[in-house]
Length: 275
Image 1 (spheres, rainbow, N blue to C red):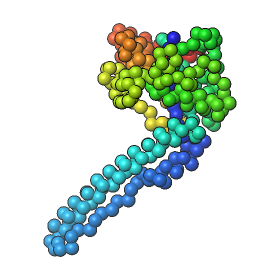
Image 2 (image 1 turned 135 degrees about the vertical axis):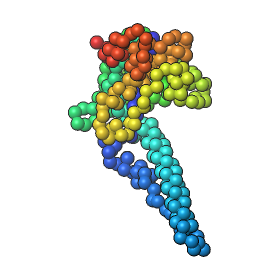
Image 3 (image 1 turned 60 degrees about the vertical axis):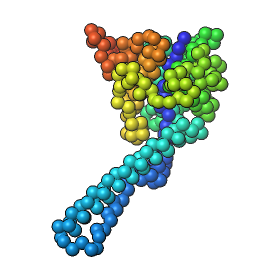
Image 4 (image 1 turned 90 degrees about the vertical axis):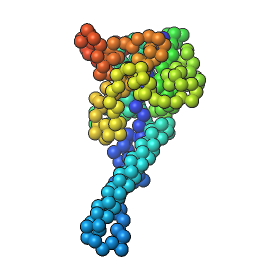
């Protein structure tokens, strides 16, 4: 039995619009000041002076753009680092699918507020319903094995009890407990990305969500769709790596097409795997 799992890890969402992001912007400002160097003082011809000014201005613009790109990259790296820190990182959404069943997801949205505990409690409740017999439990399939421990850590902090079988102490790839798809593909070095692997396998490539912006604008519906698409992609890649065709519903759910099956768009939307 396989349980495919994906999640959106974020910095503390209570501070997403203010503290954390403001600190990152202050440290890595998006707009670097344009600095144009003066032209050589020995130029006397007006045309040559004007041409030199334009050339210097063009150089300054390119330099500013390059610095801005580097600042953006530093902000992204700082974001990723804080999101994966179990002390301050949080889970904004979790999606999963049991075997070939439709995907299900749960969001941290609670009215106008965010509650990570609701996300974790909903996952724990569904796991109990899906696997009432703790002697017949699934192997978790994830893109990155560290997610399994991160969910457990956040459950501990939020006083949410996961089922006793949750494989927190498992190795990165254990066929009966945790299957890290990228570790399975590339070995312990875990080179490459699942996006590149999916493209190589000619699976549909969906536009990734800019999570920081989506959280700021509270686009929870898009966050849910994107998280479920990550589960669909994870399952499709996993099936292909094991010599099995991807599910038609997953192909359509990610925006692809299946010839002769136009009604699959309805199937792909799915309902919760738990009735």
